[in-house]
Image (cartoon, rainbow, N blue to C red; front, top):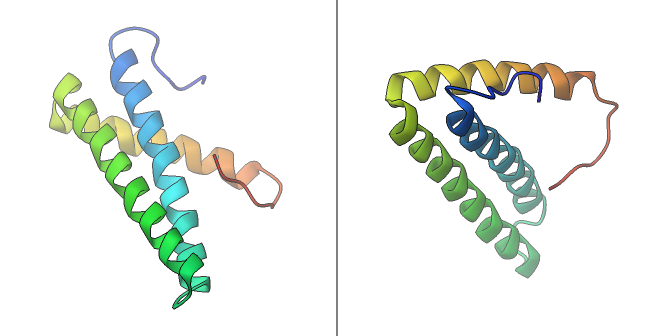
Length: 97
């Protein structure tokens, strides 16, 4: 939260944080889908993976509409870097939103 703007880019940042959350879920569902490949559960996880990928793209698209493509992509890279540092500092374990 320390890195999310409270003025100016606040809406853009909230949309991009939502994109990052969806992106992480997308990664997790993709791993689950691969592990359960050729099973009914694998198909279910593939569907969830695809849905989360669409959600990620939608939030990034909305942020670009709010702040402009270049600004939104730059902010996404910056927030992703902060998010990566945060995730790297957490203890290992299973997580899903």
